[in-house]
Image (cartoon, rainbow, N blue to C red; front, top):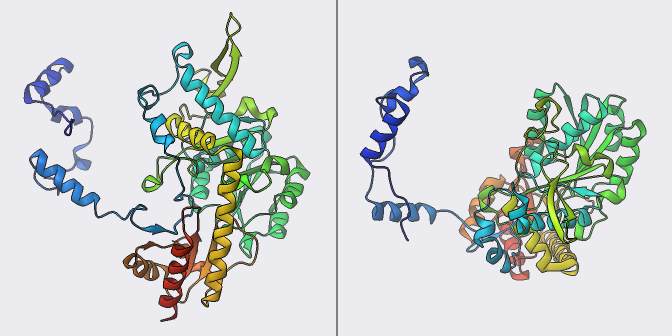
Length: 449
């Protein structure tokens, strides 16, 4: 059917009101004080016949800029990556597409196995021992990691690098306020965490140190150096990581991380105007009973056949609320499935090759940019993002790029006044040499005007 919305009739409305024992819709809002109730009519257009409404909505949708028609160099946490065609085929199957969550294992073996495979691949990428069945997104997962650290260590201070995504830092602040925790930001030098500043702020009351790898500016943090500081006082080391980058970089688990989190969006999940996506959460074995969300375990039935079940569910739905490790009681099962299918389709060699292409193309873009007179803000190694200094406002440059068919980089000045006129440029495997060359040429020409 083209039109699937069947509106409620006046008779339907009348019968529903009679069933719940009220005379009008107005009575449903009686408990809301009149002083704060909206009075008058909402400033919205009059209703349209359905065919006209569909046409109008399509016209609005066509005003959106998309990555099918424009070449995107925008990253900052959400990226334009290759998605194997098999991903949509699998996640569109009704048993996955319509399932909410696997409450009954005896009829949810396919869903549970898919989640188990997701957990396994996340562990392999991160170098950790246990991973959960996914979380809402990367920033949510990072905040949960910080809260877990405070609960586990019984300490009250969270140190967060300013090179962590600003939106993720904001979520940490929100969660910390409810737990009466102190959040202290550590300054950066040359685009990476200032280790000396970290040493000054670090003390015995530090629950955890939070860094991003690669960080928000695309730079590679020295995890081993930071880990030595963190574990000197039995604090916890939390690393937020782009999982695709781990196809090349040493996994945080191999460098002493206690908790590794991030967003699985680079694997099989479209940008989708910023979400929904899929967070992952991986820990060492000693923390597996503290993991928020769900864990799927592998077992055998009474006949010895392999089967899958939800296990170690330390959630408020299953235990006393004051003993729960988290109030997150669900997961992004469909997006986790998409990530699992993408990773499986790519395979270990494919993930490594995809990561290598990101690295190579980003370094090529930086080299070409410098040849066009543009200056990179930071000197250190990076993955698929780097920062360019511009002579003009990034918003102005991006408007000019849009006219040329490009989605420009992220305006860092929106989050940090010290980085005004600095553009964060993302280069993924999807970008061709011709696109990179033209993009850099357009930026260089407009910046020099």
